Image 1 (cartoon, rainbow, N blue to C red):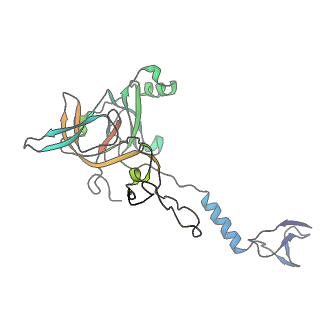
Image 2 (cartoon, rainbow, N blue to C red; image 1 turned 30 degrees about the horizontal axis):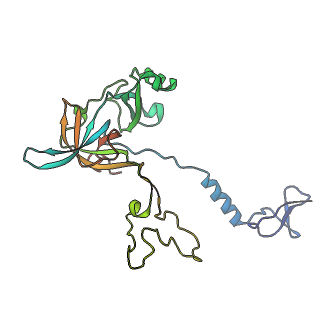
Image 3 (cartoon, helix red, strand yellow; image 1 turned 135 degrees about the vertical axis):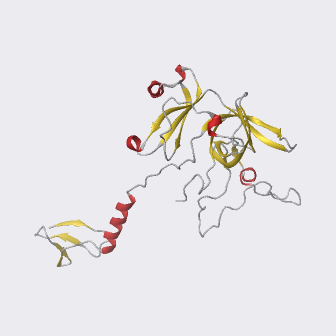
Length: 277
């Protein structure tokens, strides 16, 4: 006879007897050597191995990409002064691929932006764009939609046909990187006294108890890398669309510094352009 295994999850010591179909348990016989707790743990571990499929969110409509030019004050006809961000558009915003449920499992439109020289792209990238008959472009982004019947490869998106003055849009981009910053700048902490003998001015302070829990909780606000992350500002109003200058003026501030890439999409309004479910 040979000892098979000894586990804390098993209730007792099991070994295989002379009969291969039976097991011996402390002189007795049993058909199932594993306890219920062990089988339950085994079932839970098998469930954990199955990973959930993460899907991107649905857009309210196709959008465009633009370049942030800066901010200025815009005087409306009634004399009101509105702070606006000026967004310019370089050559691009061309459909490079149309994805459907039959070919890719979901409906989406891939759009390219900002023309570049051929040598700036790799051969696979050039082949992908040449397949659609599009010019070489630096940026490619997808817009997932409910229906893509109205789009064709190498179709140029016209800003006037997508947005109108007064529309609400969602603008996303990369925020300005600030580098490694302390708690006061990064999380708006208050500093200590600068006088009266205080020796704690801008230090972080206590980050947790000693014996219990004896560790630092995950997600604790501490000094670290600040900025340089993707951020979306929702429901900003389009104040002015200038066809001659090929720019759009959006009320308020948007992420990034002048020259950064921006993604402009119709604002999501549940029940209006986004289903409630």
